[in-house]
Figure 1 (spheres, rainbow, N blue to C red):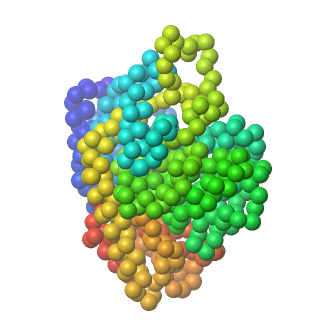
Figure 2 (figure 1 turned 45 degrees about the horizontal axis):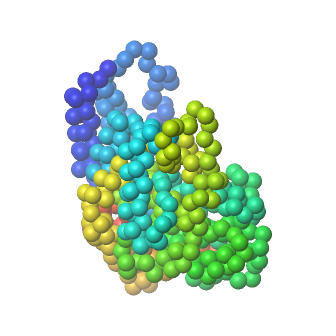
Figure 3 (figure 1 turned 135 degrees about the vertical axis):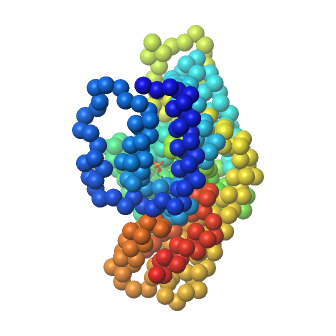
Length: 429
Ligand SMILES: Cc1ncc(COP(=O)(O)O)c(C=O)c1O
């Protein structure tokens, strides 16, 4: 059983200590598949154990099996930060356990969510009047957008670039919609011309693709999409957060014409999983696609239920951590972290560019660098595997035109120039 105050203090101490030493731990978990399972009891205990036992096993059994996303040398996928204000807010949100199914089930959660999502809308320079709410992930947000698009258009074709995130394909597949992937142009952006949009329900444009951080020509796509009566969804899950810096808004051109937009603060606004912001410029039609209020949820107050705008009924109190982060960092604090990440990415890209043994394979955008060493795919793959096995850094790969290429993504608040320099040294070693 637990003594909440005592165990709580121990849990907080564990957390603080973990964050202090995370840079000393291997970045990628250095365990083999099944190694942890073999050490875990096959069944739950019949008798209560202490929370201290849980913390002990966290250290002894689980710690070696964590890939440390909070490490300053985590450069894989999209690197992220779960910041201290958000961690504390998650603790309180769990204590409050607000299940915001309808307004009265949690007026605070519903109204704070609307307000803070609107704060972010303003910080990103998005149009007034857009309705925004929080979903768990960009995968769900995009799924919701596809549902709205099909509802509004009565069509079932989804159009996206070959570089769109797999969540678009997965969403289309789950909905039984037909996905058409368009080959990208030389700049890795989606090609607009040469195809009729007349049968299309939804065009998904990406700002900041997963592999290359490339940007689709949103304005041109929006014009074609509108003319064909289709829905435009913009996936800016990663790069959209960078619009808090006005100098990154070149990539926002045309987004004001979108029917829906997803941006994930859990990628680059110092929030932990999960927090995905979904806006729509057509709230009434979006609501029509989802609203289903059974008798047992009808209330005397004719107020707002955010569950009418997406797939889930039970909604967790995600706005609390967003509120905490926006207040404790302030917009300027968040901007300066992102600017530093972008500076470090440019610095690394410069080293690659100047070294004849290496090459940049895509224009450097936001905080991502995509590169390879001159040589075979096997040689490049071996470099990544050896680097990750060292535990010193963790980076991931993708393919461009069939060639194996490396990705270095910067997104952790603890990452310094020394960490990025170390990554370069490890790769060259
Ligand atoms: C551009 C883009 N869209 C969507 C996603 C999916 O995000 P989520 O894990 O929140 O579903 C990702 C994940 O990296 C992404 O990079």
